[in-house]
Length: 198
Image (cartoon, rainbow, N blue to C red; front, side, top):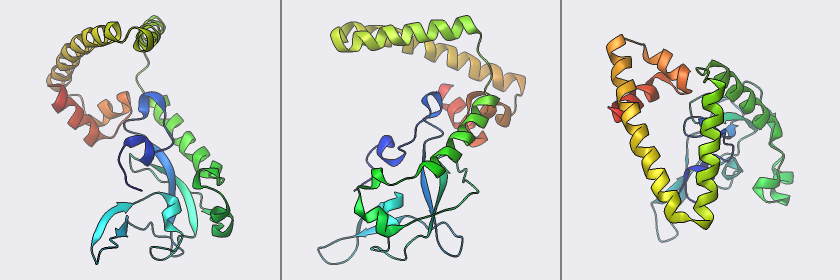
């Protein structure tokens, strides 16, 4: 199995934060170290055809078996609590059926902490954004051309606003850590976003 899209790599998503805080069960070896990606060997004589980082791939078939799971986030956060893996039980069911609720619960707590630091939006703006998103989502099924036009208008207007906001933040000397906290990402991610907006 390959990492072909964001959703397959990060099965836990947090709505507004999904781009920067996708979660998945992370693995830890017996020595307490998080192993790197596993290489998928080629069956045609040497080399590798890709890598895996999904927890179920660390069952020992491609190297040393991991002993514990923990919450893991695409932002780099790792949960402190370690949950033992029962590989006999894990092999009895498809990977998605194995109980990873402990790591997921820890990741959700992490995203709640991130969410609590986001800059709060006025309630009327939240309601308006929800209304627009719902209406465009409804159109995307029955009236896809209308949805595309509405989405294009939103994109163009938003891009101009983001560009202006990025220049204003830079002019005001706002730190990247403050920007990251406000929009729910790391300082490095915030800097990359502002560069792309400008």
